Amino acid sequence: MQKYNDSTYAILGILTTNCRSGYEIKQFIDNSLNHFWKISYGQIYPTLKRLEEEGLATVQTLVQEGKPERKEYFLTEKGKDVLKNWLEQPLTQLPVERNEVLLKLFFGRHQTKEQSLYLLADYKQKLEKLYQTYEGIEEGISRHNTNHQDAKYWLFTLDYGKRVTEAAIAWCEATIKEL
Amino acid sequence: MQKYNDSTYAILGILTTNCRSGYEIKQFIDNSLNHFWKISYGQIYPTLKRLEEEGLATVQTLVQEGKPERKEYFLTEKGKDVLKNWLEQPLTQLPVERNEVLLKLFFGRHQTKEQSLYLLADYKQKLEKLYQTYEGIEEGISRHNTNHQDAKYWLFTLDYGKRVTEAAIAWCEATIKEL
DNA sequence: CTGGTCATGTAAAAAGTTACATGATTTA
DNA sequence: TAAATCATGTAACTTTTTACATGACCAG
Picture 1 (tube, rainbow over the protein chains, first blue to last red):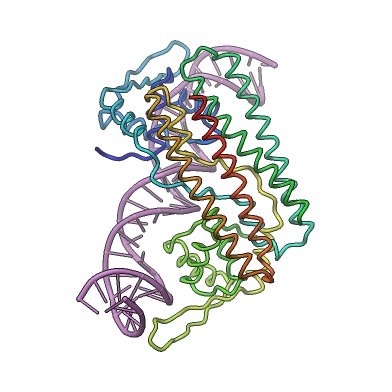
Picture 2 (cartoon, chains in turn yellow, brown, purple, green):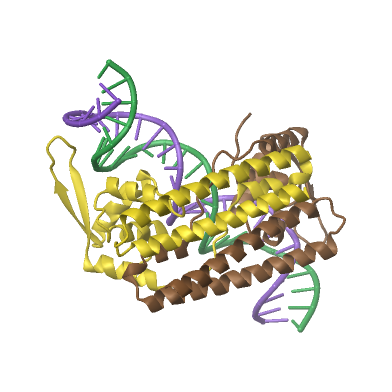
């Protein structure tokens, strides 16, 4: 079976929800996936084109009154199979999570203590804001999608984000003290 | 001031340690930076070339007996300035950390419960191994570089890795229970 | 004599971002 | 009347990985 990159699988997965057009997919990503996967239009449209070319999806062009044309994509059986197959594979290796703050702190000897403290304080603040964003999304899902079949899994991913962010905040605090 | 990408700054930073050649830089990255930043030869050599061309570093070619030639790079004042300037800037925005496991779990409705459990168990196992790797590196630094000026900062970054990995492991456990 | 270490590098491909172009409708 | 929303897409660019090429030495 041919291989695709993870962003392609993400799009394949999103097509199982009721998002059908490139525009809708982008919105879905920005609202629900953005904390662990983001994709730009520059990737979405060419990918959708390719999915169709390779028989993983079919297109239907809708002409709407007062709105631009809209292309709706639907997974084919082949597309569903490809997605299912990917879902079954465990990940081969943990990806390296690039972290600019750690990179800067790593070379902290070339900075003043104040600069390092500022770097960490700023990072902490951004993480706290992120945590709040997670809480907001979580609440939104809990309120509006209680009986949505996917909601359970969406909440799991948010819980991950919260826990990891919490740990990072605690690290900031501890490191600020130790500096 | 011209902008460079973060991998360039990483290389600039490594040149402040006593790593001087592309080969040594790669080793340094694999041993010390790998948990939050990795770079391939395909990036290192062209970057070093560029650093020299733009006056951020100077080269000295060493002819060694019984070994290949070795190019040693040294930061210039300009190079040091560029590094320092970068270190001073706080990060503009938190990067999105792509996570393949979360992406798969997000579409967990299309999997059996067993598959999701397997995915999480496998992820947990990999995280535990990673945690042990961190402990190993930490011990190595504590033992051999106690009085190295950089050691303190290196240990901070490892602490980050440990804390975040710990949180991820706890999430795996909680999610496995809740599934 | 095989595989590892030391050491350089390049070419091609893949992956991803950014900026642009288009244009109608709706809302403030 | 300005700007936001809906909706498509591409071209150029940047970043990064992968695979290849070269070659000597040393240890098992």
